[in-house]
Image 1 (cartoon, helix red, strand yellow):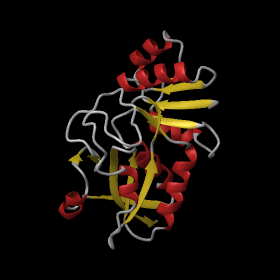
Image 2: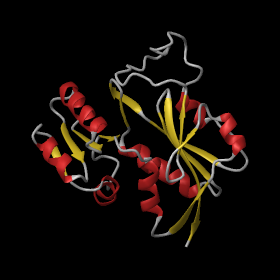
Image 3: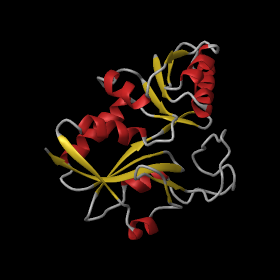
Length: 217
């Protein structure tokens, strides 16, 4: 990995930067954070800092599938959805939809968040932040996972929407991310869907989703 962008420099962003610097010492790690006080604190840690709003930074600087190598979302927003909303805004109108009660019965442990997003999880408990996300079992229960969440979400078939999933890969214990290619591929699928889209970002255990429609202006 030559370059990693971490969107958010709060507790989770700083933790991600610290772990990834240890694991990938040759990588250029950039933390994007809008809070000036947090930026000053991170600068003392010798991280490369961009003191700017994260989604806006992505809008202006994410130009191709090749740079950076990985993006780590570490803010309490569905980063992929917010970036796609901005990318579509010039040519499309995007309208968020409520996730229906019937769909919520299908999703594991759903919990509503702000801005139309919904959190989903295999766990009905608080997971340790240093979980190593092993292939076969849950580190808390010691039992096999009930499902691989990103695969489960991708396989949801419904007449009323298309499911598009960005798979978050573990980069360090409790730190997930994806390459830019995943964002651009999701954007292409959304443009060609022709019906409402359930966009999710998910790892094996946890995810965040938004349901919406787009229409050309």
